Length: 179
Image (tube, rainbow, N blue to C red):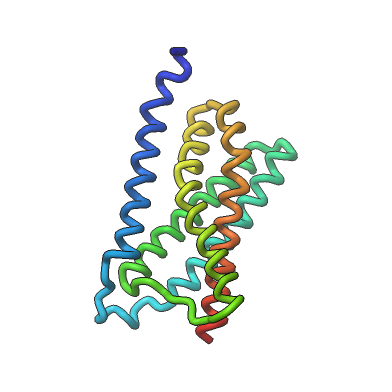
């Protein structure tokens, strides 16, 4: 074992456990927890906020990508931290919304329902995958392990961007059908 990989295992294992715990909590929240009816009309604006947070995260991710390509590292770092903040705000808002309102069902039928469910499925599955990737990518960057950061960021960026954009698409499809 090299001395460079030894100190990395513990923090990465911790980030993986944290990600698994967050995913388990969200699954419980969505599929086991029953939202109290008394809160049905409270904070109904949260899905719109979630879409805005996802859109802002996507914009910050693209800015961060452009900045690293132009070797503007300080601006890249700020953009990626901004994307992380918006994604974190999304997660807090998403948890709050589902704790209060439970699951939202798509009312469309036929092909549009298949399209919606396909987008939703890939969005959900990739959001589970990207959470530990984001945390590990940040860990490598903040700990100065830039070769490792660069290697994983190649995969983290497109998945994170896809999850952010499809989050907006899912909201737009639900909002259009519920209007």
